[in-house]
Length: 103
Image (tube, rainbow, N blue to C red; front, side, top):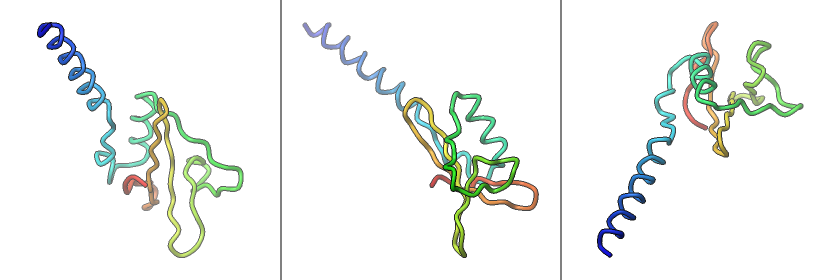
C-alpha cells in the first residue's frame, strides 16, 4: 500500500515539475529586439495573434504590432500557444523595435 502511494506521489510531483518547466519567463525578453523575440517564439511553436481590421500597425514590415492613438498610446503584439496567450508592449527606437515587457 505504501509502495503504491509512493509511486503515485512521485508521478504527481514529476508532472507538476514538468509543467513549471514549460512556463514562459517573459522577463527574459525585456530590452531585446522584437525580431529576435519573435523568431524565438515562432521557433517554439507560438503563433502571432492577428490584429483587428480597425487596428493601426506600427509599420508595413511588422503589421502584427498595433498601436493606440493619443499622447500616452502604447504599441503591443500578442502570441498564443496551446491556449496560452502573451502580449508584449514594444516601442520603436530608431530602426529597431524593442520589447519593453509583458502587457
